[in-house]
Length: 185
Length: 428
Image 1 (tube, each protein chain N blue to C red):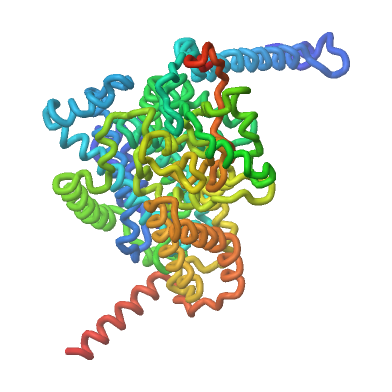
Image 2 (image 1 turned 180 degrees about the vertical axis):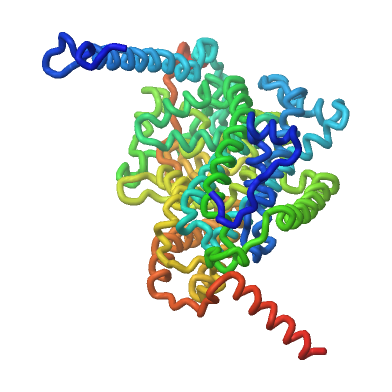
């Protein structure tokens, strides 16, 4: 066994060799632990094949004014709605100040195509699929969509008007390839 | 860890002596649930529910391990593999129905166990740690039950997963990335199902670990009792074995009778028919509700339909729902009355029963669609729930005049015995 004086030999300002080795070893083990935890957490993020499903092409030629269809993008439902003039007018008549998530219908549609309302069919509250896209479904108090899970009402521009949802239905990124084909994503 | 008069463990057989020197497990059992553990002599049947909860957990673990031998955690076959268990696997229907209803039985006994604790003040010093660990177990149970409900991959499984992981998207800024991280995608899918299966298998063993801590913490002061008066000497106690092994054994018998009656005669009474429809990510069931044991919390979530201050309705709902459980962690310090048992707390006792009714009302509202009058009833119920813990309890514990208390457990027991015999002789 080394005596106390031998252990302390060669030290200045009160720091022993052993203290340095201790701190260095424990720090290095800490860095190693963090380096191992990162991939263990990151493995839970969406994998490459899930991310690969990122664009969908839809043919909208068969959707008559006043009708809507349900399709899917990244496995999430998407509503494509062909608005009639009355619905557009209703959406325009609402003062922005009355909206929980203020957006005009022009901001939510493409220029010159304002009858095409394309949104995710995912309620911004807790993710149920709202009703109102299919014939005969409850469209809620504002003539757009109604989520039966917790009672959120969306208007004809799919903006939140009543109920617990915080945001308007999300408009996904999309482009018109032609007058009848849309690419989402 | 026990009273001084506890009977010491003295192995006589050479094999038991040998074992005691190498690995003293028999000693541990003897001192924890045997003659070496003195327990108050006056425990009533409400003190059975801890053991019943343990029995329910063991039933879940055993049936669950067996089910995992036949179940396939893949979104394309999960639903069919459950039907395969129900139709083809030998006794599979029985094991799955036992597991399904076993979860409900587990929650029933745990809720009774919790309300026992609330009535008799079991959360008070010196047993705060027992209570805190109990709340942890309750949270773990809820997580486990939720993930288990997702596994059959029916409509309720899928939409339950969608809604419950949606809670996390309420968190500002990081919410949506956190939700995608939890799901491993943008909607519940194969990645979600796989990880939920993995965790559903793991968490019951974590629960078992926390239960060991819960019992360890309990055995330091020993059990409370219906009078709330601490044990003073030997005549206040009886040995755990044979007195409470027998009483608990009787309780387990009644529990099993109810459990098998439910499993055999109405196995789907507590479930939802929609969960026998395979998951469909494009269509939400018309009426989506969680399992019955989550309904009061679900009603609190649904009660927030309006933005308030700078926080939106969605985040309020989620905060309130988690808050309603997190509140229980502070209970030992919100109730400052030194009197434990409600038998001697005339004012608190009234509010205890109002709370019971309030939780039942919230449960009822949780089942209803998001319409009036259910929304307003949920709102009133939620306000009362929080008021009970944050306003009523601190005030009541300050202004209440407790009833006269006996000096000891024995005095309480003998006084009761005396009135019983005198009234018996009076009628004779």
